[in-house]
Length: 247
Image (cartoon, rainbow, N blue to C red):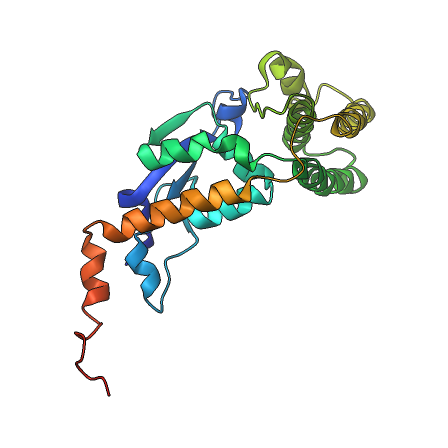
């Protein structure tokens, strides 16, 4: 079992993330690809389980196994939730389309905590850069502002939108270092305050719809177990026929 084969043969959803998905791409921007693969159910019957994630095979590519992806999405992991809402979908099969239809099931008020915690960690790194070098890494400052905008708007509307739209030019000005750090810091403070205020009246549910997501996962696991697959032979080859070797 090669991890690359799982990505190549069993990807159910893949998209482009990063600056291209956020509407912040410039000349020379990388193309960050993210995906979800469904490991065949018989692989879980072995002692050696399929990997929860795979890096590659291409540069800037990263994929999660479906169960791990759903687990992280239910925890309101910002990177995972944004992956589900990328406007740049490159591949989706019927299982992938059902996963996308569950996007709202993963969203809840937990996003306020997880997005805020992630943003705080990133801000501390920027502040450390300012103390050490007199300025932050401006590209990272731009992306933190974008995340704070996305979090605030999600809490206000109940919808996660990751393309920055009309905020592209102001954000790119930050990336170019055209705003002073105190001005950028004030902008961050304002966005964080607006997110806190929105959380008090958000239309998002208290918790994600875990039961609905688990039902989806069970269905696709069962369906996979019934499908003929080359991996089945690997598993069946180490299982003795009924009655053989049994006491």
